Length: 173
Image 1 (cartoon, rainbow, N blue to C red):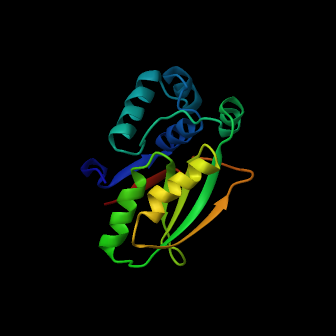
Image 2: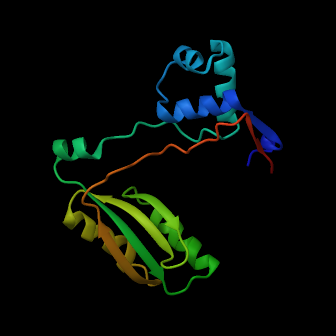
Image 3: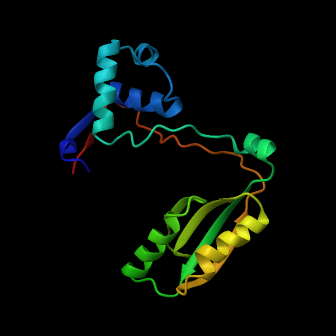
């Protein structure tokens, strides 16, 4: 956590800004200011502060995997459970560092209980997935078990974190 964040309080305007930006980060500063009922300079200053505090980690474009699959053909998402033979801190850190370097690994979660990791991976097709498994799992001597679930339909996908609707939220280090 950033040193500036010690005892930092988010007020209702900050929470509204964060919520609005989670819904659409491409909105203009003027439209954002109108939405949260502040002046454009105030909106710009507050948004800049929220970025500097690290509360806004990134602003990205989310692609439609369904449309992309229609354009490029195929597209395969898999949820992969990975269990390691040795679960010491060094082994967990080493495996995590190895898999997160791969662009096809979209998410990497350490979980408990059960497997050690759950990964969300993307491959163009089944041969691509096989190549990925060879690279990520078969080549790693510490991987004990891999269990894959192939996504057949995604009913919901959001990146938005629900924020409190109250007057303020205090952050303490």
